[in-house]
Amino acid sequence: AVVSTQSTGVPQQNIYPCLLLPCVFVFNIMPLPRLTPENIVALDCEMVGVRGPLGGEVGALARCSIVNYHGRVLYDGYVRPEGQIINYRTRFSGIRPHHMIDATPYSAARREILGVLDNKYIVGHDLAKDLQVLDYTPTSQLRLDTSLCQHLRHLSGCDINRKPSLKLLARTLYII
Image (cartoon, rainbow, N blue to C red; front, top):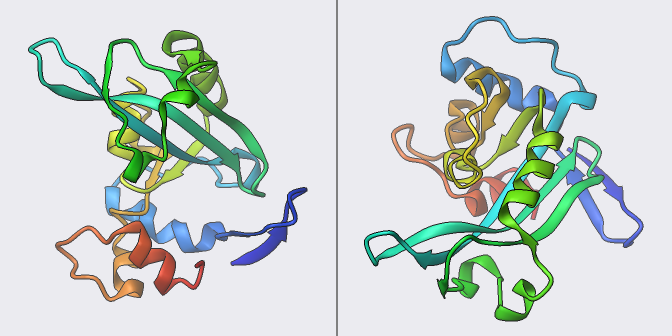
């Protein structure tokens, strides 16, 4: 990993693609387009609970953050979900009611987010949930999920049949 400092002065770390390349082979897929820093983004979404169609709670997008290989922010915004928020999940999401005041409506945010993700390798942890809340299904060749990467599981000492937490991976790889 390489440490860089953004304008905030806070050290940030980037993982070289060589750490992620072994993850690609977990999916048993066709040869991939060339993996370059220009076409790699990292995605993380935060969800809140909204009232579902049957009255229960379902997850809805409340914040999306996307950075490029070098740590430059490509998108970072609060998203107003379609539906009544019944659980902010603040302990996990960090989302509070005041974040929703000027939040971008879901449909507008989704359009912008999908524009950023178009034809990019998407790196993230447990990406299925983030992609589901965006209602986006990129080809599996463009998804690099750190929770499914056997190479990272091995490096972290995690059981091969269990998904490691992001906290465990970060601690093992000395990112935190």
